[in-house]
Image (cartoon, rainbow, N blue to C red; front, top):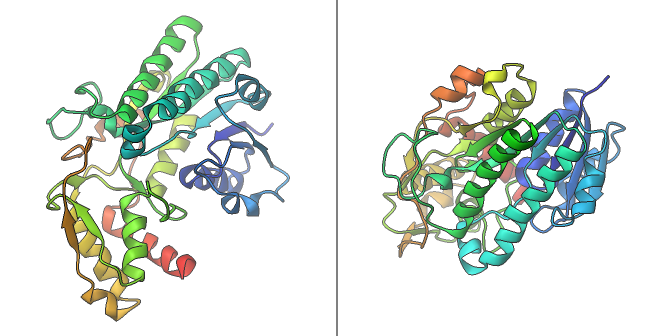
Length: 323
């Protein structure tokens, strides 16, 4: 009997990559998305697969969540409104989706006897903690409404285990990037946004002086962590949160310069595009660097891509798909 897995946010960047890999591994997969930030083009190729079914719906509607969770063994919950700036501009909608929708999914998972609820947590939970590397049990105070919502997710997941026995695993994503990440829109992530600007010979603008650093994590590492979370039978690994990262960091300035170098291999003129600098952005954490010791120990995680390898693959994908 094939395991039946529900991916929420299935038409998004991370969700669609998970669906693709799950189908390749022979799982029965259901997808749920309302296309608020995801795109139909991301899942079009999967719709003809007999092992895939898709529902257009919103996690803010409990009935939709209940229907989506029927006959499901595992949930990979990716649906959320990302972006710190978005949450600062509109904290109510971010809370409705990220907290209210999350609670709906937990209730539906509980009511339908789902075996394990694996969810996208966030490195933003570390907040104002200046300690490096970031270790799972040492967090600071949140710096944005988005970070608050992601912290609440972890608390709710813990309460649902203690109160109802629903097993969960939280994956604190650190600046995920890679194929299918949308370069467009006001809240586009920095790497695809800069890729598009460089390709158009436009100067990207870094928030601040470029010294802030990130543990940029390639999509394949994130996919691996999700699989380890659903496939592990180590009960000591359940009901925990794990950093999902590489365990290394690069400055935003260093990332932008490397991106320019890799893209100039496809178009020599890109090497001459200037990188600009602007004011710091509200809610930004200065530095992120994850300890991945816990993920290695309890889930057997080993990153397959360091940042430079992932960036090269991402650049190749964007060059093929954005022109």
